[in-house]
Amino acid sequence: MAATPMAPPPGCGNIDPAYYFLCDFCEAWGIGLETVAAAGILASLALLLAFSILSCMVKDKTKKTMLPTQFFFLLGTLGIFSLTFVFIIRLNKKTGPTRFILHGVLFALCFSCLLTHAFNLVRLVRGKVPYSQLSMLVHALGLTLIQMIIAVKYIIITVERDGIDVDRMGREQRNKDFVMVLTYVLVLMVLTFMISMFTFCGPYKSWKRHGMHIFVTLLFSKAIWAAWITMLLMSSFPGNGAQSKWDDPLISLALVVNGWVFLTMYTVPEICFLATPFQPGDYPPEKTLQKSTATQQSIEAGSTQAPDKEGAEEDVLLALNGNCFHSKTFGTRLCFSIPWSTLHPAHWQDVMVHTEAKEPSPDIH
Image 1: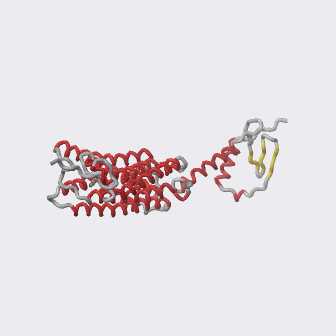
Image 2 (image 1 turned 180 degrees about the horizontal axis):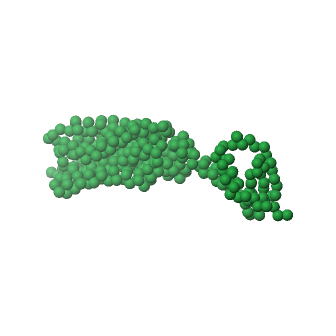
Image 3 (image 1 turned 90 degrees about the vertical axis):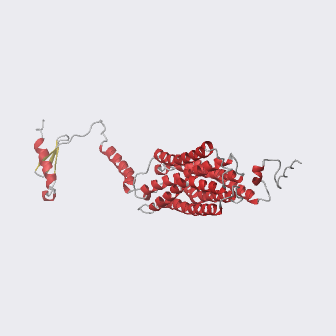
């Protein structure tokens, strides 16, 4: 007798069984997580639009240097919410490699952007010159590229060379390999957390608030990662090659919660600070004084170098004759009672040298 096909679960039509968790009313975790993930995708898109608008209004050059890394951080958060659907779908030949590659790459992108931002803040709180946009972007993408190489190399070695399918791999080995591929991401997380603490040491307090956003984000992220990795490894046991029904919900829940932590603890506060005006207390006094000094020098230059009506400067030669000064140009003689004892010796010497060098010519009647 031919085996009768299983009827689809309530809420699902005639679709592939791999997608049953997306619509199964009996397995409510799939519908619940995809709802929260979809809300996170919409929130990320809304924040991405707000970020694009507010970034055009930023006038502070120091804040502009952080815009590329914050933009890629938002893209990484959007990808994390979207990756949740890959874990809700059953593990197979297509979803297995996707999980191993994208999970680590997306989190590496987010933590690399936070690490680069933290390094930049360490300089700003101490009054130093920030990194350039290109430098921060290259560092963030370069750190992400390392995780991509690690994940792709694992898939090539495991799937292509050894011919082992990720979905047919033993559960214990699969979970251990999944965590092992994320070792570099864990290093990035710990390093970012440590660097964020150095942002609290410096005289410029306004930049410390940005460091606090990174610190709190990493604190919650570390707690989430420690929880789901511990539960994933402790629930695995040898001799069972089947995928546990709680492995996918566990990782999916960790993805959704961590994504919302990224949005609420870092993205929203940072976007709120984008449009804030320039504050002189955010930078060393030299930077604030440069503009006022340049303005004062331009005013003084314009007043001292202004020509007269005939377009020529006055050439007045003053000759010292006791306490009297003789003007060659106007033919007048002005006498003053000047207490020479009050003059600085250097000034008196300059006047005497000038008089000896240029003696007044005799008047021609």
